[in-house]
Image (cartoon, rainbow, N blue to C red; front, side, top):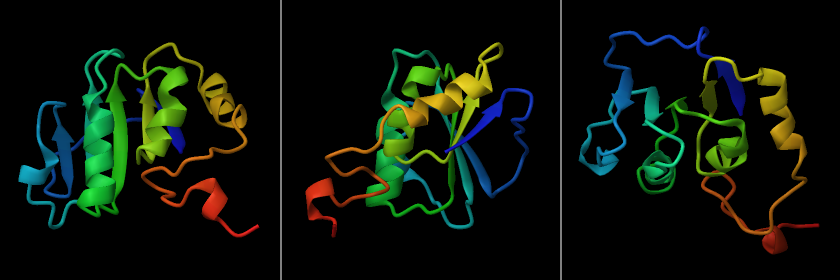
Length: 125
């Protein structure tokens, strides 16, 4: 997962970019020509963007970039990656190097994810 700061995050008017509020059902959208979707976490306790990401990856087969924006905390990054996010935009004041260390804390997962659907036991040794 790529980690970027709020200063590096850019939005622009384009048919190739969608910015979705967390109450929008992705199944109602026309995703033709879209190559990036910004999903918004209005506050860290609101996890509906996780469900949106999972729907986009697993059920709608969206292969473009999914970007987590809004109230993104470093302790959520691993779960964001497992539900299908490619990029996380950190809030102002959050250390990007501390955020990257979150991925070093877990060597692997027993169950599958939105990205790696096969569970650990089913993988060839």
